[in-house]
Length: 356
Image (tube, rainbow, N blue to C red; front, side, top):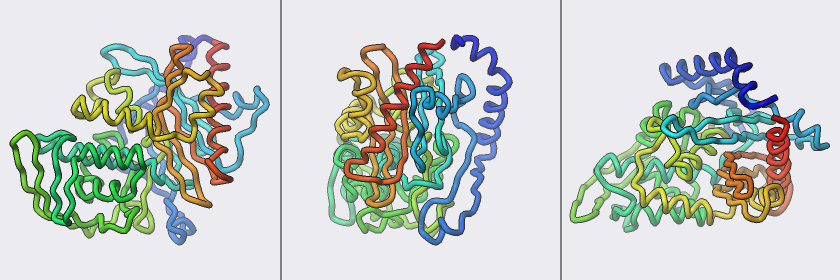
């Protein structure tokens, strides 16, 4: 079936998805089903939300498509994928694919370090609200001095846990979880409460922000609020984490409503950090799409528990762009299961494209 025919056949389904999207945007409500075992273990409970960005058609379930190439998705694996096509001033069209728990379920994996880009974006959003960019120098009452851009590089490219915690302090615990991680910004399911290095991220010391001859002092901030993620943990979904990468790497192609208010130099720096971050999926992407394929991603890993990778894939050979998020159990060194799944998913999408 041709893609245009699919879109015409999916009008009713699209209306339903758009209606759910509008409802989520208006209410800002996240539906959470309590999971007692998750709460006891500290794992995130299941969160299901309506899509913040309406797709161009209802998602295609990948299981049957994968089966045609003799591949069965391993137990415990979830996939969100989308081919994205620029529509000029209208932004991007998204043709989505799901497997396992798909885009929005997060009851089966830890988001781990894949959240670090969102924290960097939250810190940049805060300093931008005060008239600064990522080049601003933060002098913290805790005794450290760094630019926001340097902290973002350390957290995203090098996956520094300490830099991640410092960025939460810059963003401010409550502002991060209410103003930035919100329906209005497109991240209603994400909650960040867990320190990764032992720093008290609920408390931000007084800070002095300096850039280009301007200086601003920010008073100390402390939070006692507990947000909707069990065990004071971190929660997110494959969609929101993958979408965070998309909104950096594909910034120039987004509609004004989706574009984050980032300084162009910060966009370039973050894009380079994501390309250098060593995404788990990269070998599988290159096996599927050729050595010229480019991957921008943020991997995450919890030993003995979960592997996560989210990113943007450029198929240079075919001139196509994909957004891809995969979570899997940690079954061995290098999160090799993600490599395998990424390869099979991209081959399935390519086969689906050829049938149109």
